Length: 114
Length: 435
Image (tube, each protein chain N blue to C red):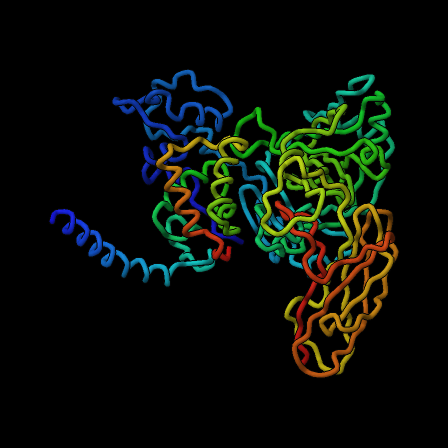
C-alpha cells in the first residue's frame, strides 16, 4: 500500500510537473537575440543552472563564446573537459559541472540558433 | 555593437562569496578569511599570474584588485559600424561582405581574431624579437634594428582566418561562426623573415618555426601562451613572409599586432602571429597551442559530417584555398529591372592566384565570365567585376565562382566537413531584388 501511494505520488508529481515543463519548452528561447537585454545573465537564455554557467565562464571569456553556437551534450561535455585540461579553467566540483552540462545541453543544444 | 556583459566587478558587487565560489572555486574559512582547504587558491593565483603570499588573511568576497583594472586601449568604436562582432573577450570581429570592397583593406574594415587578451601596447623601445633554436647565432633584435639594419618591403597581402566560412558547415563545428568576412588585404611593410633567419644562420636541422607573442592567455596564466603556431621553413623563407612593422603605411594598430607581427600571406591567419616577440626555429613540426589535436588541422581523408576523427588522422593545414566574395551589391539591395548595374568583388587563392572568375544570377544554370584584374603583387587579392542586367522584376541571387592557376574552383555547395570547420570555400551568394 505504501508503495502504491508513493507510486501514485510520483505519477501525480510527474503530471503536475509536466504541464509547466511543456509550456516552458514551447516558450523556450532559442536565440540570444530573443534574450531580454535586461536579463541579468544576458546573453545566456534563462534556465536552471544559468548562473553556474555564467560565473564559471566569465572569469576568462565573454558569454558570446558560449552562445555563438549550440552543440550536442557530447560536444559540450568535451568542451568542458577541454576548458579544464587545456585552457586553465578552474575544475568545477562534480555536482556543479553536472548542473553546467545539463544547462548547456538543454538550453544551448543543437536547436539553439546562436 | 553588442551589449556589454556584466563583468567581474558587477558580479562581485551582487554576491561576492558566491561569485568567488563559481569563478575560482573559492570557499573561505570559518572566519570568512583565507581559503578553506586551499579551495580556489590555485585558480585565483593562475588568473593573477602569481601566488598570493598573505592568502590566509584574504577576506571572503574581496575581488583581487588586479582584476578590477581593465585594459581599454581598444574600443569597438575603432571599427566600422557594419563589422560583425562575434565576441568581445576574446575580440573576434569580421567584415560584412560589402566592407571587403576596397582593394586595400583599411584598418577599420579588417577582421580581428584574437585568441588571448587585447594587450596593452608594448613600447617600441621595450620590444624585442628573439630568434633562437636551430640557428648558428641567437638574435635579439630591437625595433630600431628592424627599422635601420634590414631592407624593407611593402606588399598587399591576404590574411584569412582558417575558419572563415565556418558558419556554413552543418553541424556547426566549435569556433567563431565566421561567414565570409574573416579576410583582409591590407598593405604591409616590414622585413623579410628570410633575411632575419639568414642573419641568424639556419642549421640543417631547421624545419619549422614556432611563434610567440606578448598578449596573454585568457585565463591570465603567464605560463600559457594565448596561441603559438608557426610554419614549415620553406614558407618562412619565402620572400613574401615578413615581420611587419607598418599596416597601410602607419604603425600597426594594437588590435592588429603593434608594434610588429608576422605576415605569412595566404596561410591561415594564425601563422601570422600578432605582437610577435620570438621566432623559435624548430627541428620538428612545432607543437605549441594551436598546432596539435584538432586545431588548425584537417582530416587526411574525407570524413562524414560529425565524425569524431582520431587526432593521428589529422594534419596541419597549409595554404588557404581558392575563394571569392561579392562586395557589391550589398546583400538585399534593390536595383532597376532591365537596367545594367555592376556586380563586383574580390578573389584570392592562398599560395595560388585566380585565373578565371564567373558569376551566375540564375542559381548556377548559366555562368558568365567576369572581368578579372591581375593581383597588384603576388598574394594580393584580385578585383573582379561584371555588368549585368536583371531581365525582369523579382528576386535574384548573385553567385560567384573563382578558379585558380592549378585548376581548382569553388564548389557550389559546402565542401568537406571537418571537425573544426576550416576551409569552407563554397561559392559566395548575395541576394538582390529587381523592381
